Length: 422
Image (cartoon, rainbow, N blue to C red):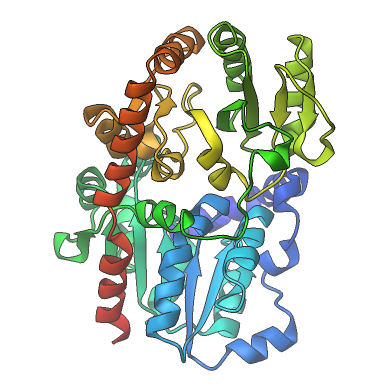
């Protein structure tokens, strides 16, 4: 099966490379991803005292920040290298972990690229954040006797169904993991179904609860209403990490909410900021005054601000009166409701929350959030919250409490890693 997999990799190489070149956020670091590291860096890393943590993009890298910080505190003599696939992931590492970790682009899963990078880095331990199952990389790490830990592991329904269809193959791939630290009971059951021995699987919870709580204590990157040209008397409706189709829903919702709260300002934060021009155009077509975060001018009254910067959304939730978390009205799997919750904000999200299924259930059960099916339901739910401020405040308090009660995944994960590193 590995032979067949590698034949397919070679056959699809032109398509893979074209896809990477077509995506602006994936173009940087392509040379590194093909196995060519700068000579100076390769010489520096190859001393066998490196912990390599892989986090695909910005979301995973952000979630891993408290874990990296605790690992650095526990193992100060070890070098920590954090790899990502995207440029946004790299920016997160450089911004949030400066002086604590170094960055590397993760190699494409070609055997020669994997061997070249492992030869250079020579890690004492590899930690994969969430669930990145690259067969050649894991197989080569196992062949070299390098322990591999899956941290904050999760298996979304679609991914799990795909792995299950190829269980006979992925069962062999998963033997590379020394330990699997999973987010939820559902994730534990699923990875065992894929063939991992139960004694190598532990439920440690979700690192993102710790990361969200840590954000409320961190000063860097915080943004105020004043920085957006929004008066203290005005209120913010923040639609975060939105995808095509969700901006339209948020805009339609906003128009209806203005009948209840005329001083409300909408902030749209598209998940991918390269869509900023399209999002601005969509808002203008609906008759709104639109301003980019990076091109603000003096204004008042109903308007839309498009957040075209990275790293500011999490702290902007602090200033919000209403919050919608994107990737949930469209079938993307949902983005994290934990960051606004950590600031004590009631969270509204759509029906597609598979990536945060357990968290979404907790939010609904504990009255910390509201799940809606479409733009009309979003407007109805938010109208209720605007009219009943006591209910809005109660939901926000429940959200904050939920985040506090579910912390501890970082400490549990570090304890597992210590069993391997010593």
